[in-house]
Image (tube, rainbow, N blue to C red; front, side, top):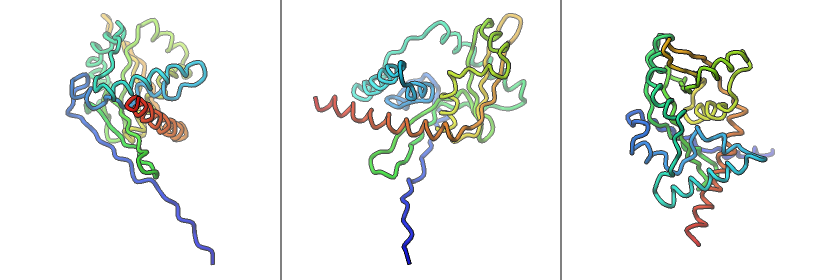
Length: 227
């Protein structure tokens, strides 16, 4: 009788939640230094003419690992506005959805591999957790851009946020993420919400690309140390 083939399965991923760490604090930067994080997963997937963004991100993380210092990042006026409006956006979401949000500082996931020494560690900093298996991502947006998205109707989901929302679900092991586009104006809040559900095919491809990226990152760090 023929023997059944033995399939070697990768051990279960390790997921760690740090809800006692404030985003933007020194401890937060320490946790994420040198790790691919969901807000930049689009760079990991970049190809063709945008492949240079992937290379730039690879070098940035390698530099963080080698130096032990967080890479300098430029903060645009839009980013500063977003930081200021985030508390109002979360309060608005709680009020209109009758829920209590759970603040999340950082989530770290070790993507286990069946090949020794090839585990990949990634992270995410969602704006909040909703219930047990759902997250919230807030993006502040100028009123004119919000109106443009609204005019597009069901097709208006900003595709540039797909990798981040699906990546957050990969890291946190969630089933859905609400993407809240928000602006806090003098006449009251303006908002649009998109409910993003888990796309396992996209997440599987993202996971493969993250493992490749992590391998290249290790090689780049080793190359620097051996120069």
